[in-house]
Image 1 (cartoon, one colour):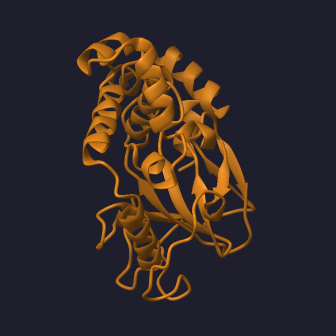
Image 2 (cartoon, rainbow, N blue to C red):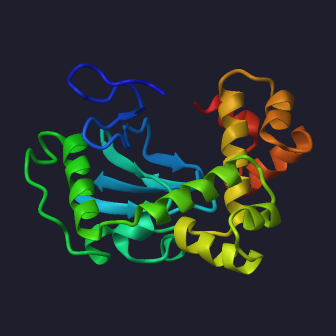
Length: 239
């Protein structure tokens, strides 16, 4: 990932850093053209887009956002289970959607500099205010993090259920509530992202596929096309 310059303004088309107040990943996108492509990554984000606070739900396919010249979008990535805790709805209700925060909760008072002066800091303050209001159960967030880790490690649905003392059916319901889709879909999206990350780092596609957990390069290609409509090679060249 690219970094930020000393003043916190974006450098390049995508920048990200850990927020000073929350430690959450705060990112910024400045698109190069009239639309910006977002590929599935298994997470929810709180965004500042066109003067509005927006919740970006978990995606099951690539999304294209129409943009304007020089338009900047700021976002804060939510850790596993946090979206469900803060917004009070199942993440499944937000899958493949972009929803105004005000449609989910009463907007909090957050104080400090405005979005016009410090968008990254303002996003963090909104997040802190939402957290203070919701008071998420740490135990629930630890379980969500553990389930997400199991999906990233490639554990099967049955192995994950047994590891966490759940039936397969209960795991599926819980996964939908926390992540927006079932454990098998979550695992597939994390596997795709890992393979893509390796490929973009210069690892040959065949080796990236094997390391990520695909049966072979053709398997990686099929999954990438199913999720994004593009091959891993095309996605790698697009960076």
